[in-house]
Length: 184
Image: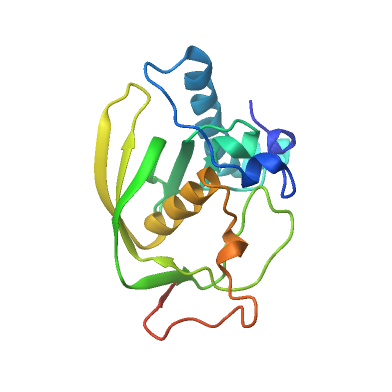
């Protein structure tokens, strides 16, 4: 079981490295890691389990965050009734296209690997077309929008050594392009 102790923090060089592509067939060890990453997200979103194990709630967890430099991330975005809206292990994800219109979370972004709040808007593309592979190597392509698109872009950034605060305007953290939509 992955706990907060297994998640590396800002300053660890693995978070700033470009992760390596996963090869297929996937090793048993990598498949087990994927399962544990999704289990962490499920547990972190369950108030009783999260409190018992002192887990911070998360909607995404990338392999580099558990100090494994592979292009794989777990994403679990719940809907308003806490049912899974988007629940996938994304292996070797690639953004095929992105909207011109940008979006940002009105409350800003956070990260399980960053222990401090960093205020500011994180501009991201409102819509993306995402390609990824599942654990068996099957290809998936899906159009994503709004919050799910933002979460997936945050996670893909982890695979490229980028942290959310790298996108925040340093001089004026809450400045956005007038066409940017705020979500939340």
